[in-house]
Amino acid sequence: MGILSIFTWWHGPGLGTRLVGWRTGIEVGRDDQGNIYYMSKPGRRERRWVIYNGMPEASRIPPEWHIWLHKTVATTPAEAPLKARVWEKPWIPNATGTPLAHRPSGSLAVAATRAKTTGDYEAWSPD
Image (cartoon, rainbow, N blue to C red; front, top):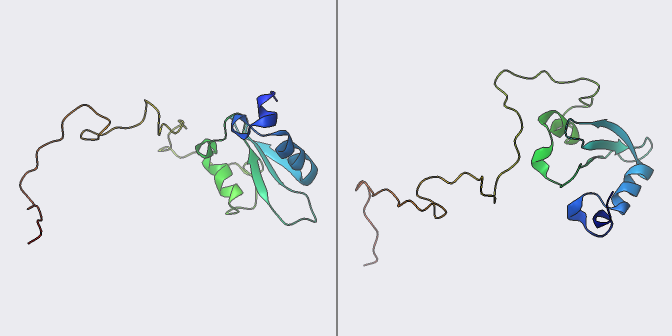
């Protein structure tokens, strides 16, 4: 835990978050990215949460942990791992807002010109 995480939440979990997790929760597992998953201790209202390893980015939660966090399944992926499907792709970070984001032809972010219309519509004008 660096000095920045004490004062800023966007550099990772702060001291308060770590203390609450330690005091009120039980660690139930970790994923391959180092995110730590917790659930509330017995006798408390059931809650489930994640403490990210690094930047808090929701797209970094794998699908098997996502369904556990949202209480779709009762067992954690550490207890009953899901089988990977042949069509599943490996995780890649969310590129929105970065130079790697998808920019289709014709968008304002691309220098290309928009394709001409084919005449399949007529522009509206008020009478």
